[in-house]
Amino acid sequence: MTILTHITLGTTDLERAKAFYDHVLEPLGFTRLLDIGGRICGWGIGAPQFMVGYPRNGEPATASNGFTIGLAAPSRAAIDEFHRRAIELGATDEGAPGPRPFAPNAYAAYIRDPDGNKLAASCRTPE
Image (cartoon, rainbow, N blue to C red; front, side):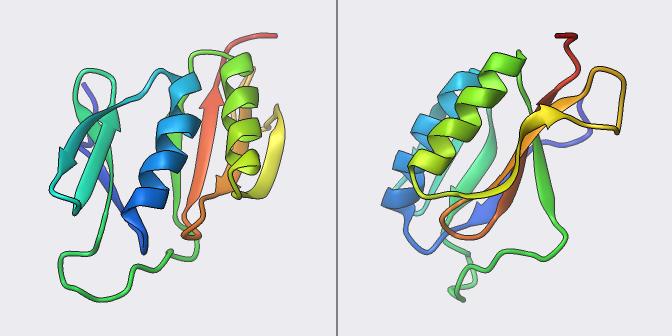
C-alpha cells in the first residue's frame, strides 16, 4: 500500500503541461486518466495520482525550493527516455541519468519541468 493518494503540481499553462507530461511520463507507463475542464489533469497507472493544474486559490503557481517528486520507473532504459524527452521539451537537467548512492543498484535522473517543478525518475534494477 502506498502512503500517498496523489501529488499535485501547479502550472501557469495547463495545455503546455499536458503536452509535456503526456510525452515525458509515457516511458514510465503513466497515462493521462483525468482531465477536468481545463483546470487540472492527472496521470497514473490505474488511477490518477500525479496531478497538474492551476492553483485553486487563483494565485500564481510557483515551484518549491527543496521539493522533489520521485516517480518509480520500470527500468533504466525508461529513465533514460524520460530524461531525454523532458530535455527535448524544454525541461532543465537537474541530474543526468546514472547510478545514485542512496540505495544498492539505484539509478535515477532529475529534471525541472517548464514551471520549475523538480522531478526524479528512479529504479533499483541492476544493470
